View 1 (cartoon, rainbow, N blue to C red):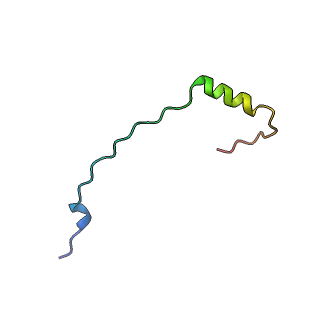
View 2 (cartoon, rainbow, N blue to C red):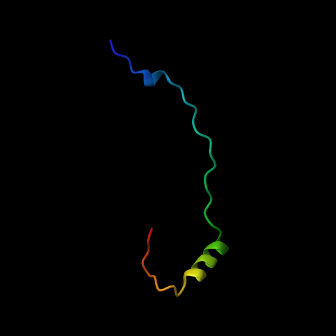
View 3 (cartoon, rainbow, N blue to C red):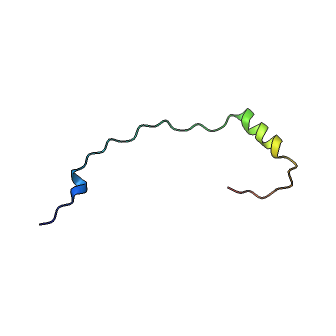
Length: 44
């Protein structure tokens, strides 16, 4: 009889904080800095 040894391992759930996006002011600064750069292609 074979056994799945992975079922014997108990791993606690990871604890991490959910990331917060940039503020409105940070986005405005980013857009202002990239304005007129000549690149209109979205890379994400």
